[in-house]
Image (cartoon, rainbow over all chains, first blue to last red):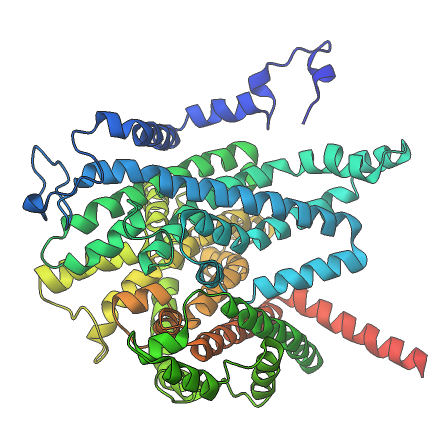
Length: 297
Length: 322
């Protein structure tokens, strides 16, 4: 990463040509039609989700038993569920649940993971050993199971799902950050900063973390997709939000009982889960390729 | 090598112990009373008190924890509150189903996933590669349970070809295997591709090519074995996860395996069942991780050399001490 002084120097470098800078990443993403489509889908869906109470013809919670199980038609493009509620309105309104679980739980795991990983990687020795053994315990079973166990203990509720998922995915971030910091710690610019009598805190926050950012950003993008997917599995199993919330996983969970007779109850929420997870993955892929071509997989 | 395995097995003990304590403590916070679930809504307070006493739920927390740990030392997970059977034998009863499912899934994933990855790497950035890349991304974005529902809808409801739930002959496993392996299949294909791409650019591949070895031989004999080393981790960690029971897939297809056992344990507040399952899963997962490391050492002479070196160092330091 180049700093500003260098960019204002004799050789003028356009912002879009500095690898790793935001304009550079943006330029790369714009060149990928699929990633752009994903971005537009996610942003569009979020906007629609927030304005859906005003633009949808039917309220997401209006029950009309007369229209229960109505098949998709002009009036109800996605049909109605078992209580006659309009599925399109519910799917749109529910978008913000699934997405915010993905975003906020990733935020939690990212913040705590980075702090733990940074401490562990920078100080090494006993501190490192202790933190790593704690993470070993968390990683002794699959992440989704940890999330299930935590959300059982926390009880049902939207915020509790976020907390459970956030905790479950801390180890991934912590390990990644630790590995990156171990590789940076020996770098010359860190040595220079130490020689200039920088405090440890300053070295970590100003020199090491910014240089470890690009794998972190990639991990965040991927993690949002994974958490969204895992969260919908949780509510599908009945551990997430309560069944009346129009969360996609919960909608699938209730729709499942009517799969044989009225499959449209299951098809549409599932399609939306897949499309939004795919969008996050596409954007994540593009960011990764832009930030670090070596990480490509 | 044996020493290393022993060391790793010993390291597992404290981890499993902490997992056990953690899950025990966590279960204390779970809302809902198991006694109420066992007896139903219209139980008299006297009955409730009696059952609580019988199950040892009236003891203070630490006494309960100590009793649990004491039993655990004898590999006794206690008895299920609901069925009264020992959790250990219930686990043993359900394990074969989970094992069969996991083995079928992993074979399916490897047999399909790796060739796709190799194909993509060889045709990197061509149309076919892009199509596969998009397709695998699509697969890993698809919720497994939704795919399961769609498969049931297509093959059981519409075409009436395959059974939609339960266990029986091999046809009962087709849909669960498909639904359960699609995610790991995608990740293995992508992983193989990236690893293969890296290997193809290596010097020894150019050497092999310049020696005039046929392209096929270079790919299958020189490139692929090396490219597969990092893929082992992906394969074995998905296998470890599947051994832990495909919780969601098992409950969609009502396969009586470990995952479904745990789900019913959680729903019924059957604490011994939940604890037993979690400890079993942690154990299976850790063992798989150990096996991965051993396979690594076995297939990659570079890693094996490290062991040998550290071993000789060990003996040297031992000698110097004596």
